[in-house]
Image (tube, rainbow, N blue to C red; front, side, top):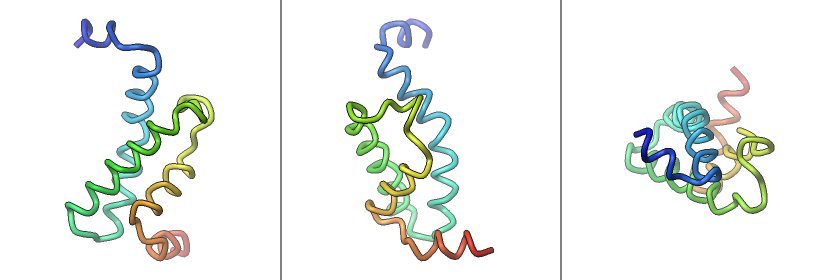
Length: 89
């Protein structure tokens, strides 16, 4: 794996680090919505695809916040109602 990572650009390494840090948190939040697994996986995948495409506008490691990921996830199908219920606990 070291050989592979040494060939990656800084941007890709930043994304990998960002994904490794943020994906578990977002996945946990998505799972709390009790959606079908395939829907949940699609939301997570599409959210990070959109975040990757947005890389030119917002550097992941510095300014991309978890709140922005949640916003993207909602646009991909995460029900806003489940977030409101979680926040009101």
